[in-house]
Amino acid sequence: MSLRDLAGLNRRDVDSIKSLARGAFEGKRFGQAAALFRGLEALEGDEPLHTLNLAYAEAAAGQDGAAVEALTRFIDLDQPRDLVDVVRALVLRATLLAKSDPTAAALDLRAAHLLAERSDAAKAVLAGGGR
Image (cartoon, rainbow, N blue to C red):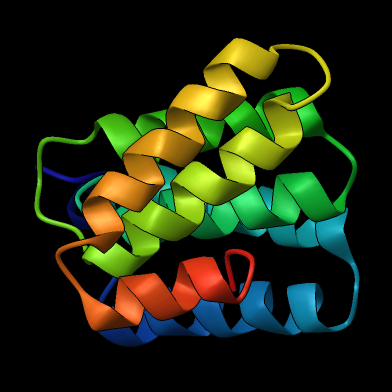
C-alpha cells in the first residue's frame, strides 16, 4: 500500500502537489521543488517520474550528490520507464559525474548511446545534448 493510500489522498490531491512542484521548478525555486518532488516520491513510490523530476530539481539547486542519488534510483528501477527518460537520466548523471568520476560518466554515456539505438526519439535526445 502506498503512502498516498495510507494518508487517504486522492488523485486530485496528488495532482495539486505535482502542480505546486512544477510551478516551483519553473519559478526557479529549486529547493522548494526538490522538497515537493521528494514528497511525491514518498507518496507514490510506484511513479518513476517523481524520482526523475526530483533529480532535475536537485541538480538545478546545485545539490549534485542528491541529484546523482535520485538519478541512480531512477535508472536502477525495475519497473517500466520511457526509454527517452532513461537516456536523459544517464546523460545528466554523466554530466554531474564528469569531474569527480570520469570513468562512471563515460560508462553512463556509453549506456545512453546503446539504449538510444532502439529509439529515434532517444537518438534525438542525445543529439540535443540530453534534452
